[in-house]
Figure 1 (spheres, rainbow, N blue to C red):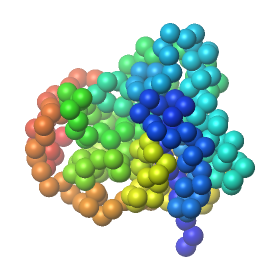
Figure 2: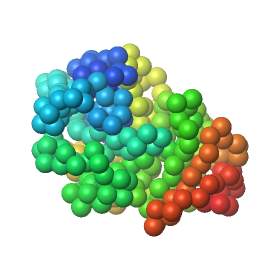
Figure 3: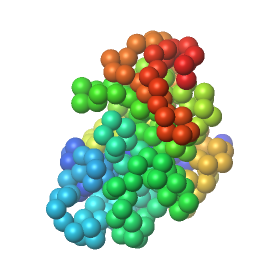
Length: 264
C-alpha cells in the first residue's frame, strides 16, 4: 500500500537561531528522500528564535513566518507540500503547535503570556493541535522534565535528535495516558535529511495542515516512522534531572519510577 511521508519538526535559518539551513535548502533533500511534505516548526519568540524581541508584534510575526513562507514558495514550485507550525517554549518543556496560521498569531499577541492550560485551550478551540516535543529529553541546559498529559493532544514519541532511551520513555508515557504519538527529525541542517528513520507515514496525501491535525485527533490514517530501538519498552529507571507530573488541576508531583511507571 502506498504511503505518504511527512516531516513534522523542522527549523529554518530564517527564524531559528540554532538552524544552519535556509528553508529553501530543505526542498530537494526531502524530495530525494521520498517525502511528500514537511512542516516548518521554527522556535517561537519564547525559545531559540533569531527574531528580535524588541520589534513590534506585527513586524515580529511577519519576520518569524518568513522561514515557512520562503520554504512553501520553493516547495510549491518543486512539488513538495509545506505546512506551518511553531515550537513554543516554557523553558524546560516545549510544544509543537499545528493547525494555526500567521493571521491567528497576529490576532493573539497575548500568546506570549499564557500558561500551559491557557495555550492548550486556545489552540484546541481554534482547531489546532498541541504536541509536547521530546518530553523526556535530558540536556545540560534543562533542569527538569515536566509532563502535562491533560494539557496536550499528544507527545513527540520519536525525535531523531534524542537518545533512544528518551524516546522509549516517551512512547511508554504516551501509551499510559492514551495520547497521540508523533515522530520527527527535529532537523536543523538540510545535509542531514534522510539519515534517520523519523517522520510520519499517512495512508493518503495531506492537502492542508488541518488534515494533519484531524488525523492526530482521530488517531487514524497514519503511523510513526522510527528505528525499532526507539519504540521498545524503557530499559532504565534513571534520570539525570527531576521528572514532574501534573494532574488535571495543574498540581505536580515528583516522579521517580520511570521504568515501571507505577507513579505515573
